Length: 237
Image 1 (cartoon, rainbow, N blue to C red):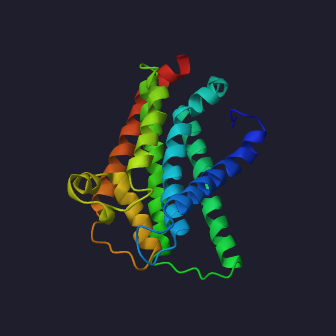
Image 2: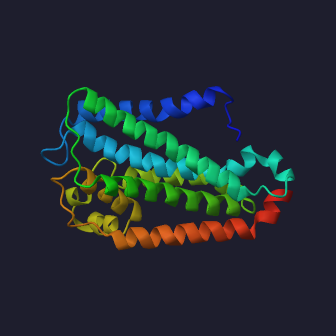
Image 3: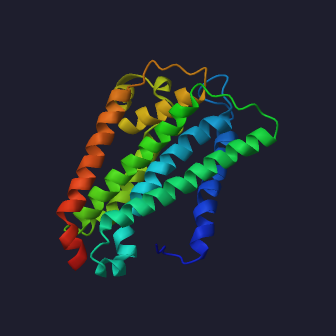
């Protein structure tokens, strides 16, 4: 599978999320210096928001362009755009899961205890965000065959989702109308799932897993149907 930057891209795949996390954690520590949830380490709070959302955002953005990056392989009839999308999604999720477990390993080596409310819940929540990214990337990639500028807009939409879905706060930290909006955001709910599964002291009062699973199903079905409907167009585009 091709990547846009050649061999150096494999190094950058690992370095980019690490640098992204490091810069934001340092800024958070400098500007705020305390976690929105008392008793939770600020750096860990940030990482449990940044990394899961990067899994979604990077998967969606890369799946969106997966066919363009590997179009030469479509001369083989047994190869489809879905193959590129799945391969790219697995690569992005694999890299970010590796980074996540690597950071946990560093924490353990530094002598900190690894305590989870529900480790399986953390993994499933992150996997769910990755699959959401796959669905969005498939649907957007199919639509961009007919609306080319959409491929340039989707990354900005994903960045907006990243900034407004609870990376730097939780649903319980906000009040009024914005909380009501967040309660219906599948991305905010997915982050709530990550954090309530990671931190034993966090309440699940605002967690709505039904919304998360319904959204995941809708995104995947839409993406898969869109890819299948535009498969012939993708070959000739």
